[in-house]
Length: 136
Image 1 (cartoon, one colour):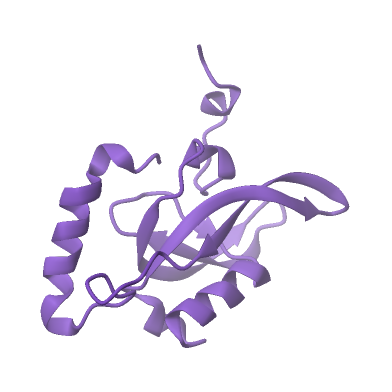
Image 2 (cartoon, rainbow, N blue to C red; image 1 turned 60 degrees about the vertical axis):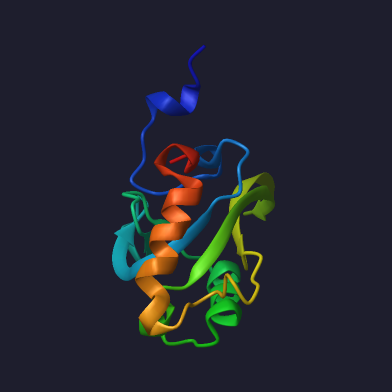
């Protein structure tokens, strides 16, 4: 059965794209781009291995600042975050929205691996998760 969201593709990541999953993604870059009908300039976070970007709102930006330990977006590159869908209020209406939270971190899986182990950690994550497990 088709999903109506499949008929309206978007450049931006939406809650429906997660398909009920909570993927851990690694920030690849942050761009400042025109978004929406008014073409308002907003920060957009892009993830390794993914084409769609997450348009940042203040809530998600503040959460990434907490996770990354810095408000400098250059410091966000390489940081892992977990995406999840939840009900949010937007312009007085309840709707599905995207939020971010820290992934489960441990000594074996820090949020930002040391520089000499970074590539190994990324390769291990890709092997464990696999491309088919990332729902967008």
